Image 1: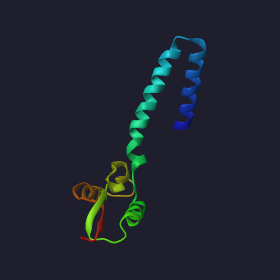
Image 2: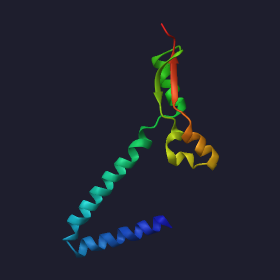
Image 3: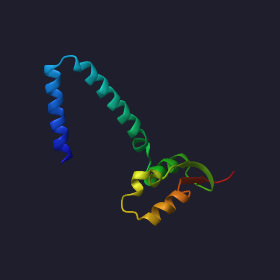
Image 4: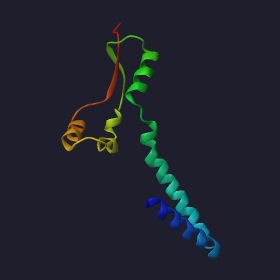
Length: 108
């Protein structure tokens, strides 16, 4: 249903832009604000690193391991991911535990 509402909203906005030139400035400001908010909201998911990628990156930089040289947030620390297939008790466990990904190298 949401795609149809978006199409209808776009059609209404297009009609307004044709009929009322004063609304163009307001529409431009709203579009700029929405784009800025979207960029702000997407910064965390786009910078996430999944365990396989983390292991590969650290393995290239440090071939062996025993002391912690790097850590990164686990994807399950991103709250929306905790609601995909996890029950309430599991979500509580994720939030109360330190589930960061860590890499260790030999102490020299």
